[in-house]
Image (cartoon, rainbow, N blue to C red; front, side, top):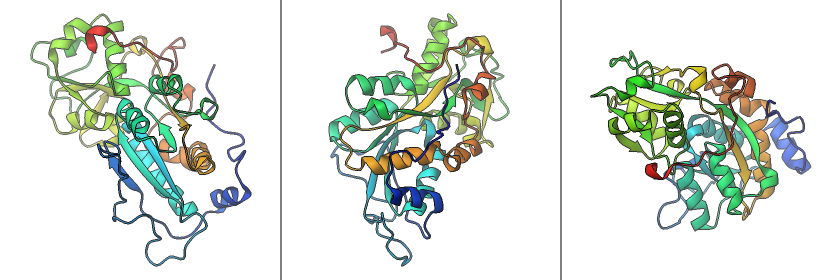
Length: 321
């Protein structure tokens, strides 16, 4: 059954003030604070791009939510559209969004160790299930935003002629994957290889293990490797540099999805619910469509089989840890 990620009541449970802001918006805007790699060892909040603590920019009058800050720990599988959605939400509400990006496992660890934050937005269900088991998120707030499908990604033009998983096993082929213990797409890469019976053959060719989805895509864009196992959407992050080689449908181990939930210790739960509603509303989903994410399971299943599982968890084999 298709998972419905179109919220028919996107503003349910929100105050009338927040509903009004989300529906009609506000003028002006503030800059989104972003921090690749998370909150840092000190646990001190990252500053916004202009170094200020979220004051209105350009002399704009203060808006109703201008004094509020929402802190997100985000797996970088969704970084381009999430950055854009955060900026739009800031412009609409006046709130400031402080976003930390990195591997989903690292982001979960930083949220746990810092004991702060409002939203956990990992790149796959595997890490959300871990967050729920550890009691770090409110399970009843979890929602699906978009879907992802694993694929092979190569430099534009595919200079090494990598067209299959078997090609990743050829002598001399330089392969990259993300860290499977802390990055969603790394876990999917190992799952794809193992279920194809190619884990042992491909592993000697893996030259590097990237720390996030963003850095996995960069390996291809910079020509540091001949191929990675990533997400099909990577091609649209940098179309001049990255080309996607789809997997045969029978070799797509799982259809992934990107979930979002409110962290248990959130200081701004109402604002967090509003941002989740925005992500899953038409304006938010339009941004994800622009970046070629799948907004329904049916869209993603075009690259998989009718029986391909969706989401869930896959335990990483000991030899890959």
